[in-house]
Image 1 (tube, rainbow, N blue to C red):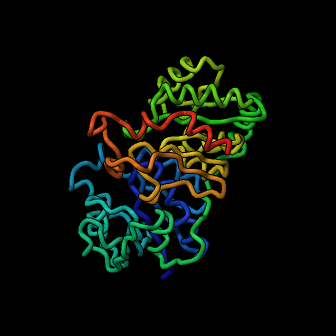
Image 2 (tube, rainbow, N blue to C red):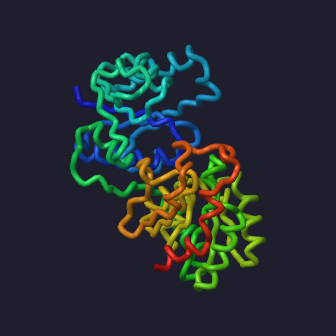
Image 3 (cartoon, rainbow, N blue to C red):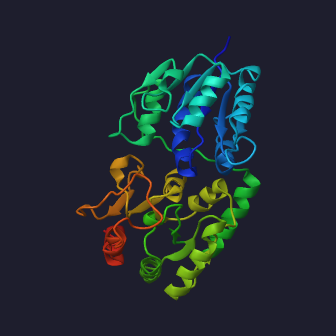
Amino acid sequence: MPTNTLVIQTAFPGDAILTLPLLQKIKELEPDQKLGVIAIPSTKSIFEASPSVDEVFVLDKRGDHKKLRDVNKFAKQFVKHGYNKIITPHRSLRTALLVYFSGIKDSTGFSNSALPFVFNKQIKYDKNSHEVKRDLSLIGYTGEWRIRPIINISEDKASGIRERVKSIGDKIAVIAPGSVWETKKYPESYFAKLIREMSEGNYNIVTVGGVSDRELCDRIIRESGVSANNLAGEYSIPETVEVLKNCDLIISNDSAPAHMGVAAGIKVYTIYCSTVPAFGFYPYGEKDKSIGLDDLRCKPCGIHGYKKCPESHFNCGNNLTPQTVVSKIFS
């Protein structure tokens, strides 16, 4: 039987984008196989926009597949779909149960996953490596890991986006101020100052993000006093990547837009407040830069972040001045 591989990645959009190099390499090594992905609703469009992926199955953890029996029923379908191999960079209990319930014996996961015994191949999770390199280790790949994630949309949609971005100007800086985690967010007033500085550097300004980021972007633009284009909430993630492909650089928190910038192939400047690049989720383009304060006793306070600073001062964000960020960008 031909190998047909199912990859489970039900984490956040940024993690989904960082999984694309693994998918691309799997397909490159065995182009005739069927490659499927189990995703969540918010990341479905990312995997559908990958030319390496043949099928996307949606696991709705907060809806149809919330209960254990629903996860069991969901997992049973994959043998019928012809899948005989599972690879999963995701390490959650729900993912382990999916593997177990699927009945697929050829399975690979990380040794620090929940219920690691469900995998017949366990790969050591190297916390000192980049996430892309860690994911590639699941297939034993040891070559160059800095593989650009490929996200494509239809030419009709891409053409319309190119025309819109072209109407904004020739030199465009993108600002992405949002994040799921509050302690990953650089202060709004500082982003406003960054917009002013970039505008004075003759950049046209575009803000991006999800629907929930639109008001945030509006506030920052108003405070900046600069005429900027707020595209937050107007485009899907793959469409936003297409926007970025037609811009010069992006300034983002340690969040999904930074990885979208890598996929777009533009300069990425990632601002690290409560987290650090050493976690392995930094942008890895040749000209990308990570910007943050490294000498704080309390940093990092957690791998994801928090709703508010655990020590109530948020020095990792407040002490990182816009002037410091700008000096890194223009150096």
